[in-house]
Image (cartoon, rainbow, N blue to C red; front, side):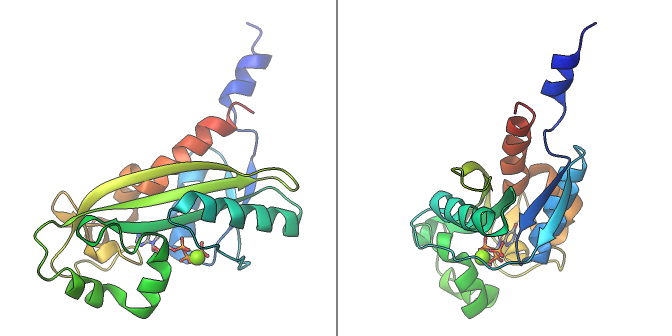
Length: 196
Ligand SMILES: O=c1nc[nH]c2c1ncn2[C@H]1C[C@H](O)[C@@H](COP(=O)(O)OP(=O)(O)OP(=O)(O)O)O1
Ligand SMILES: [Mg+2]
């Protein structure tokens, strides 16, 4: 069996890749997901500008390009957010600002009189090589905004995101990593990286 070609298809082209993020919770999830397919993620805490846009793709792409050109190495970035239906998608691309300035209790307050609790998390993973154009891979997971914070695992909005009766804060990273927006986006990146 001549599997020079087969091996190229199966094996990720990158055994090690720099992931640019200042968020330890995000990085812990990413590290585990990539490790499961034999890719070592190394965290780079650089803080690159995040442009303003209505959705996450252009934000992730611009950050990845800025980081790759500055560091002069291929990089991954993750731009994520929570989109609440009753609030017309808010906070979406402003999720970080809302986490920092309002926090979960005040998001719950905004949702106090809302019967439609539907929400989704979305992650856009952007990959960029120096002086090349970025590629993006997205994933979402649907759930509901809980009525109170529950569970202390995870980070950010995890304690108010209810997935089939339990919050991500209660479910923990191991389960979250099987169905999350981040896992779904990374799976698309992993599929792509096996083909290059
Ligand atoms: O799975 C998640 N579970 C709960 N909360 C989450 C999740 N994923 C993102 N989040 C929150 C964190 C931050 O408040 C905002 C994303 O902002 P985002 O700019 O992507 O991340 P960040 O500023 O924390 O780290 P960095 O830009 O350095 O990667 O949504
Ligand atoms: Mg950020």
